[in-house]
Length: 483
Image 1: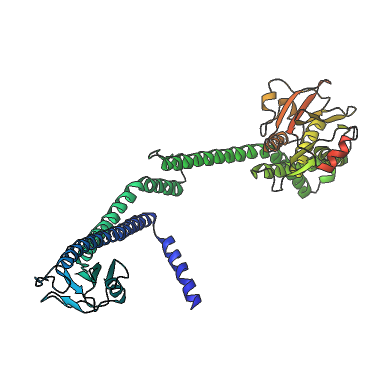
Image 2: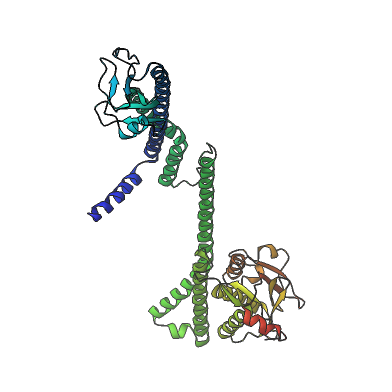
């Protein structure tokens, strides 16, 4: 039984959720009007019943006082009681011995109640009673008079209240039907912009035309919704355009190494088929060709990895954590030395804490070191400095190379951009763009300038964070040193 009772609300909820918004608004409007009419009917009925009863009681008191005055003058046994005319109040006199006198021809009243008898015996002065036990209910007022009491009664007539209730019921039905129609009309009018918005959105989904902005109409929430969708379409357009540019740039960058790789491989295959590979290519030439092939494969692998990382659209799936940026720089420098053993790196690091993603920041620092390593002479180290400056962590990567021309500075962090002087060097032109994206994701800033040694000075500013409490206390008692 309890399971069945529990299923009914869920079924009703599922049914309600399957209804359209227009139907919901119609039902809500009709229900609200029905509840309002019902409450108004209840209040009005109570007020009408109270008013009719109060009027009847006041009339009974007035008639009783008149009869009591006559009874005191003529006596309870001799006071005249006119014959009952067929309607109006009913009268009765209670004599001292407990017997009663009634007007001729009037309907019989209920027996004298015990409280009314006490009024006749002098226990109280008056009493208002309501008797609904018989077929016809009576409202009886008992008033002390002489040595007995007089009673005036009226039949309780509920017909005015019933007629009023029936009229209210008809009015309520009309109001509910009218409310449903009005609610339907209001819902149709109010939801018309949403209907047009739905049609426009479906058209965009079918045609894949992201350039078709939805007309800005309506007001309030509707206008905000339309503007939000148009902003979303604009973001999708920008994203698709960025993807198209990325694909075009990637195809352009891949064309040169793939062509060189294909020509070299075809040369080896052709010579091998002729059987004169050893005679046509001396050992030195063959070694140089194989080294060239290895370098091209490495370049393609690096380019593919950077394209994958760049096309993901986010910095990383890893969570943000509180970390010491000096540890990240040391880890990146270690990786750079393992990849390029000839590179010399000089570290001048101060412990500075930031809130960030360790792997993404390490990738950015590694790209900065790789870029500096390509330009710095073999006898000059790549200098890496980390310090706290105001509320920022400042990382500087300094090389002793030829520096960056002024015309190339604005485009250093663009994807696939390579200066004319760098086209003969290995690289894809994506390293610094990845640095820029990581820095932006950490609310930082990346800039480029000329170093004191004449080379390039790449600087990254990141918001500094407060170190954990135990570390902060330890650092406060120590001098920050070189790592």
